[in-house]
Image 1 (cartoon, one colour):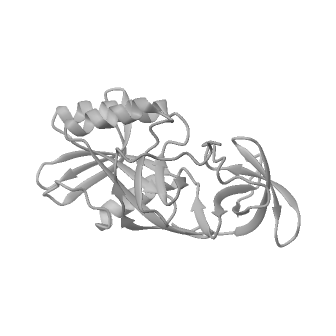
Image 2: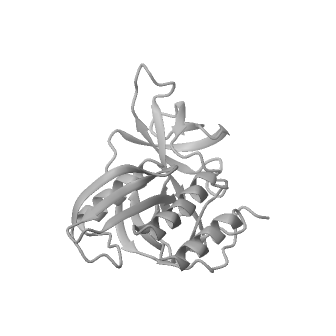
Length: 244
């Protein structure tokens, strides 16, 4: 996934979760950007850090810029919450993302499919009559090269895991797929202290056959692309970088 009209800026402040005040590096102009991720991001949004903005002016928009990536030390983190689903769909169709336990080839992939009270991100059918749900979650929280989800309680995410488990019991093959929106990561886990109920739901789901996968990404200000599968360990104790 490539971005056009990218410009670099210095982050100034984030008065609310939707917008950020930034200073363009090339011109020194102060601009307001839409933050394409409503997560807290307290571990990365510090005054003066480098950010990547996409210039996309429109009469229907309140801002001319989208903030899509932020630099943490020497590494870029993509925070565009709309990107993971597209990366996942492309990766599944190209074969770069593999679903363990699937014997057939994909003959049908649909973005967004309703099941009971949830709308899952991806629905797949194979030539072996397998029916598959994949729920995609972007992961942007990191500490000591450990990626974790969520960075804030996610009631929607909890509901999806619970209903994936129901679908698994009804004969679907179900997966949670974490797209890790940064590169330097050793393993992925659940931020249990942030949302114990999500940990419990995944634990119960895995007992019914729900599978959890994670893939990291190569990230630059202009680009994000799937790189490798990363080990997922539900039990790994994550240290929250935002705790003092």
